Image (cartoon, rainbow, N blue to C red; front, side, top):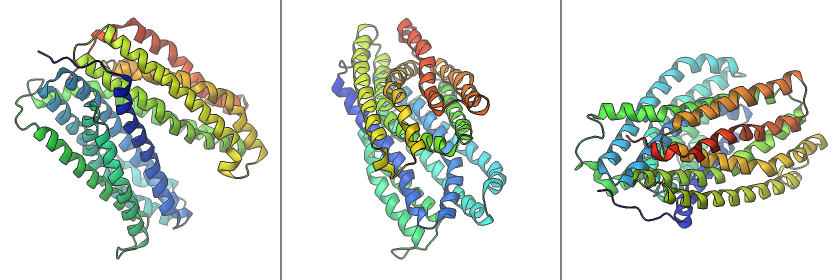
Length: 451
C-alpha cells in the first residue's frame, strides 16, 4: 500500500524553489563569465565562441527538456513510494539523454562546418569556432548524465544537491578556463578552446559529485529487480512518449526566439538596442516565477503519484498561486529599478534608446502576473502527464500569434517599438484562457501518466 505523503506546506515549496532559482541564475552566470574570460583575447575570439555556443546551447537545451520530463516522472514515482518506478524513471532518462546527445552531435558534425564557414567573418574565427565546438560536444555527453542526475534529485525534492554541484563546478570552471585560455599555472595557452576544456573539467567534477550522491542514496538500485514495463526497452519507449512534447516545446521556443531576434535586428539601432538590453532582464527575473512553478509541479507530481487528489491538491495550489503572485509583484518592482536606473547600469544611453526603455515600463509592470500564472498552469498540467496539450499552447501562441504579428509590425507596418514589445504580454494573454480552462476543468487530476 502506498505510504501517505504529509501535506505540503509553503515552506516545503520554498525549500525546493530557492535552489532551483539560484541554479538557473548561476547557469546564466557561467555564460557571462566564459565570455568575459575570452574577451581578453579580442572581439574575434568572442565571435568564435559565440558562433560555436549557438550550436552547443541548442543541444544542451534539448537535454534540459528531456531531463525535465525525467524530473516529473521521478516525482510521480517518489510520491508512489515505488522503488521500481524510481529506478525505471532514472535509467530510462539516462538512456534517452545519451541517445539525444549522440543524435544531436551527429547532426552538428554534419551541418555545423559549412554553417560556421558561411557565418564566420574570417577563416581564423571559423577554425576557432569549430575547434571549440568539438570540445563542447564532449561537454554535451557529460551533461547528458549530469542533467539526468540533477533531475532525479529534484524529483525527490532534494534540489539542494544539484545546487551544491554548481557551487563546486562554477569556481572550477572559472579557474580551469582562465588557466587554459591564457596559459597560467603551467598550463598551455589554448585560447578559445581552453574555455571549452575548462567547462568539460567542471562538468565532469559535477557528474562525479552527483553520481557519488546518487550511489550513497540509492546504491544505484542494484537490489531492485524489474522495470515498470516488461523490459527496460519498453519502459524507455513509454518514457520517451511522455518526454517528446516537452522537448518539442523547447525546440519550438528556441526557433521562435531565433526568428524574433532576426526580426528585431531589422529595427532601428536604438530600438534594437533597447530590446537587447531589456530581454536579458526578462529572462533573468523570469527564473524566479519559473522556479516557483517548477517546485509546485514537482510537489503536484508527488501528490498525484501518492494518489492524493481533490482538496489536498486544491489547497496546495492555492498557496502556490499566492506565492507566485507575490513573486510577480517583486519582479514588477525590479523592472522599475532597471528602467529608472538604466543610465546608471549601462552608462549614458542615447535619448531614443532611453525613451524606448521607458515606453516598455507599462508592459513590464503587467507581464510577470500572467506569465507567472501561466507557468503554474503549465508545470501543473505537465506534472499530471498533459504534456502534449502544454506543447500545443506554446507552439500555437508562438507561431500563429507572436512571430507573424512581430513580422507584420516590423517588416510591413513600421509599428512603434512599444507595440512590438507589447507582444511579450500579448503572447501570455493568448496562452492564459486555454491554460486556465484546462486547469480548472480538473481532468488532469485523474490523468496521471507514469513510466
